[in-house]
Image (tube, rainbow, N blue to C red):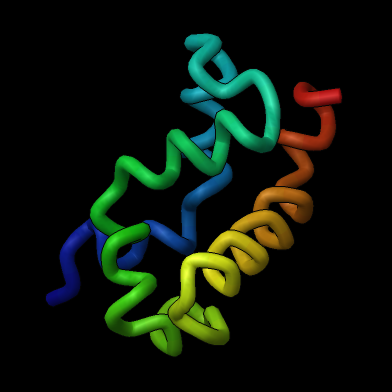
Length: 80
């Protein structure tokens, strides 16, 4: 059985919904900082293929995260 963190990438929109509602996440940069506190963020550097990420450098992970966050419709709606 996989842990909750191992499947976190399937429900990121829920995580960021909470961040937006409690006003921790006010823009995309806040979203990236919020996400950087998770165990999944640490795992991205070790097993990026599991999360469909390409590359393990900080720049590549940041680029993938930016793309991911821009595709979360909820963030587009609230973070203008």
